[in-house]
Length: 231
Image (cartoon, rainbow, N blue to C red; front, side, top):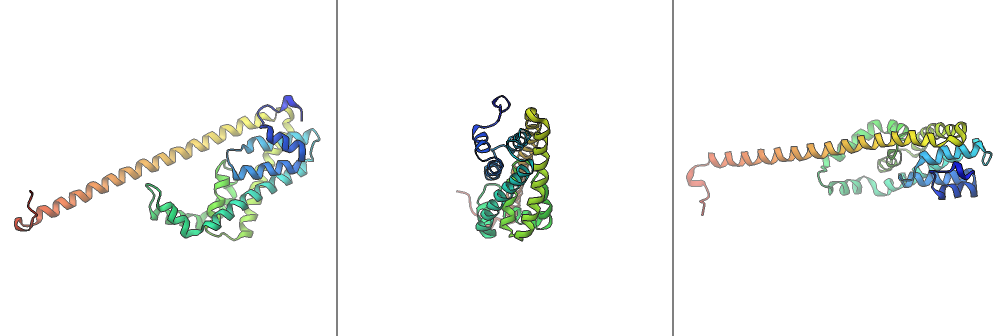
């Protein structure tokens, strides 16, 4: 690859593609699924640019990057399956501000909307990796999970590989756009988490106040002879 066109790309990704070609791009995408901070918005358009220079075949780039997405997703599905529903619930129940009812609601939501979540989740930064874990916990049928993951990944990967292919040396323009998209998604998730924490604290405070009022009312209703004397 031309060195002047590689600014913004981690050296290890460039090295994988230089050494292995399209399979190297697939390995990089698989690792991106397992370690979300690795930027797919760099890997995919960079693979497209490499295809435009003739370093790799365009169809091979599409095939291998999609295969890498599926392999990474299956690994995280396996993590969820190993954890299982009971163990995951036990771990979550120990987290501060998390209730068993929250886990049950999440489980019910996933059972109802899981197929859509797997398909469309492949197009949302960070969540495209994490969504595979609850699929494994709930033991979504593996053929269904694999098919939905393949279709969603193929759409996402094709869009960005082709963008890099047609933009050529200007492939980093794709990275800038997707980086903004990722920041918006992550900011929304952070705000949602903050809102959850604030609401949970407020609800806990109201419940504590209501229990204290109820205890005081019960004490006030007791005859004086039944009250515990104050030392």
